[in-house]
Length: 215
Figure (cartoon, rainbow, N blue to C red):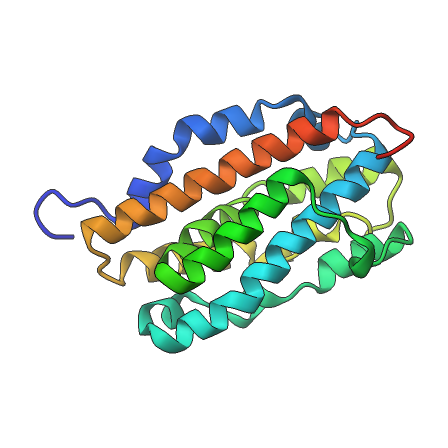
């Protein structure tokens, strides 16, 4: 780090702390974390996660080809959707039947815009998705108990890295910090990380508003 410029991961953590707390405090996320989430809403949520991960996975390789810093951060497992596909399949849901919520549609559109005007900013979205793996083993356990799920399907996404989670998160942080992003680039990453947290909050609101009959 040069002068008073913060490391990018410190800036991301501190700048998104309030939104992160608001998102985790949303009733839907509380229900998810406690395993008391309605199954119909849970399946719909998995679908939104698939759409976000799939679109980001489609856009990042081209961005990485144009910027070696993105290539340095990106790992093959970032585009592995097998856990989500398997979880949806457990509930007899197919990926091509997923309908995006309003918040998800807006995020996917933003991803397309970023891929053109600011590809590096896509890493701000990836930061939130990767950061969500922290503590996910516990969430997977409570979901399996609450929804009576098997060990390997239904909630696999939340513990998709298994025993490699800590190592992969440590590597992600170190690699991000090593890229020497400028202050303006860090600011842009923060904007998109905040957008991702806000999207999760809005998805929770939309899901909570759905009656069982149409969820």
